[in-house]
Image (spheres, rainbow, N blue to C red):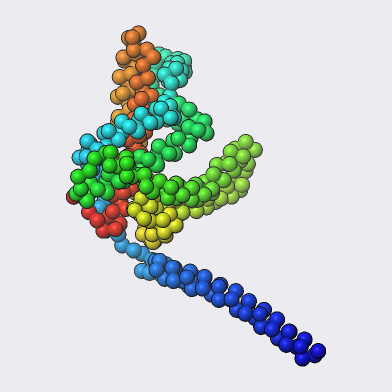
Length: 358
């Protein structure tokens, strides 16, 4: 009996040992796969070691910012036969599924400005100032869209992704010297839609620090938390930290939006590729983003102010009342801005890979 029980115990111990050996081999295999993937990626920083500038400073030979801004316009206007129909389709889709600001709402903005202008000297703030205030009020109050419901937001995201993918598809083939039509982009550019949507969701997760900052800011204003200088300093440090975290993460996600449009590239792989490209180059890219925001503000002022002045003049005639001229112009400018930003980022992505436009 003693020998039989000892043999059973030995067999049981052997099985337990084999089980733990399998578990160990499983985790060792995972560790080896992770280490292999890390070796393929660019990582100039080492844990618990000092990083020197020559180790993480990666030179990037790309054209200047002003050339970048005007080159994006040049590409769009050079291929206007492709992008003009795309702009028209985008405006129709936005007006159909999202809506445009109603003319009644725009007239209400005008009436409010007329009532407010009575407080100024001679009761007139001037047409140029009035046009500028109308542009600022319509944009900042969400006047670009006629509906702010959840369904409109979903349709807005889908339309934005469609414009993004079609624009990149057309640019990829045109800059490669291929003859292509808009219908080819509309039929074939939707392949990486799900992959792009996955990257979009990851980007939204990376925006959580910004969303948290917005919530904390509103709560701090309501409770007068910022009235104390010491608490205001703490809030400033917290806000700077949240912005830096989201900015660091989103800088590579924006490039991943472009990279994931390549055929056969999965979302996580696109994020890793974009992170490798942006390693040591994030500050330069953020400067480019700030430059394009300033450029777009100037473009909106140059384009929309004369249109609003024209609308203020033509509305003197009764037969023009009720025509949503400015809301349609706002929607058109919004869609054009989406196409322009896509072109701007795609050109930078090509330059980072070493390509040059013709």
